[in-house]
Amino acid sequence: MQIKKTYPPAWVVIQNNIQECFKSMSIDEKRLLILASPIARTTDATEKDAITITAENFAIECGIKSHSAYKSMEEASKNLLRRYFTYTDEKGKKISCSWVIRAKYDNGAISICFPDEVLLMLKEFDKLNPYTKYKKDIVLSLKKDYSFDMYHLAKKHQVMGQFEMSLEHIKNELGLPESYQDLSNLKKRVLKPSLDEITTNTDIDLSYENVKSGRSVVGFKFTVREKPKPKAIETGRDQKTIDMFSNLSDSQIKTYSSVLSKVHSISDLADNKDYPAFAIWIANILRDPKSVREETAKRVFKALRTETDFFSKRS
Image 1 (cartoon, helix red, strand yellow):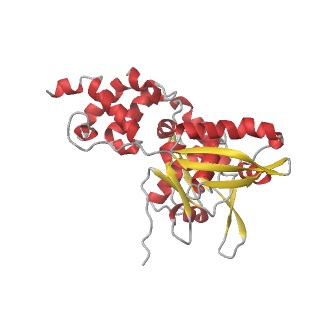
Image 2 (cartoon, helix red, strand yellow):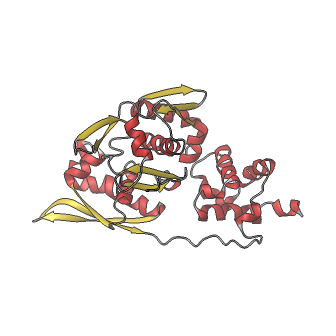
Image 3 (cartoon, helix red, strand yellow):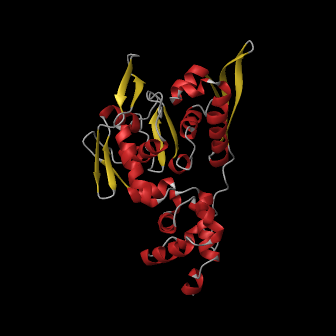
């Protein structure tokens, strides 16, 4: 008997049957899809079930200004209603399918419904349905137009360590406009900024080289290397470990998230969030350290330990 694979909400998991996954989408459309897909999976949603994302959560997860989040979500959801992707069925036939079938707007939140075909590809993972997975917080840290697409493709081929794409394939996969027919423009505006951002901000290094036929460039070969994993957080119960803070009260979380939002040593984590949004983001980490990467959690709790009066008030 085959055990069904399951993944927690921190992971984005998508069947490899989906082709041209983020083709022509704006970055906010990609963000909305990334945020909604784990909810659909972990709640075992059906076509009738609305998946709700608040503007506040969208701002925190995506590192954007809270006042612009709802407008970004509304525009993204309306565009997703017009988007489609293609997949290959069990008979080898290519089928087109809409990403979203309904969207509802109410009280600073947006609710969307996926069709059954999409839900199947977001929930079923086994040998017959190979898939690609990655951490939600990592992909949402990307800001460049095509970084999402290239990261998804790299993670899809990570086990093999490399993959090749013809010029026509990469233009079609990413939905590139005619202006990128020029090779130098494609490299300068798409490949370099995307690969630089991925290598700097994610768990992989991604590079490429030209594939030639004679003297002409006909495609690219991409190399994917996993970065060394950070050392695990120590588990011994001393003042330097995260588990010392595992029982923070709601009152403490509210107080110290506000204090920490103004601490210089972790201000780079704000990533353009305003103070209230940054405080909410920190509060989520104080409540659940595993919601972010270990190194990020360690920095937040170190600041709590060394740059606030938390311990002096406990003693």
